[in-house]
Amino acid sequence: MTLYSNVLIYPEGDRCETTSSPSFNELVDLNGFPLQLPLKSAKTIVYRVYRISTKETRGEVTTFFYLELVTGDELFSLVQP
Image (cartoon, rainbow, N blue to C red; front, side):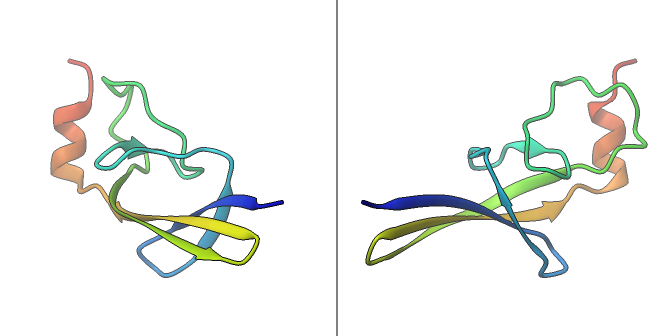
C-alpha cells in the first residue's frame, strides 16, 4: 500500500499538508485551492505555484508545491474593473 500526500511550501518556509494538487503557475489561496479570476478585491493573499517536486520513499509518495507571493501590482491587474 502506498500513501500519497500533497504539501504546500510557503515563501517563509512553512509547510502545510493539503488535499488539493494545484498546477504549475496556477494562482491559489492560502489553503492551496485555485482562485477564480477575475478577483473581487486586490486585498487578497494570492500565491503562485512556481515549482513542483516529488519525493518517493518506500510506501509513500509526497508531492511538494512551492509557492511565491503575488505582488500588489500584479494583483491589481487580476481584479475585475
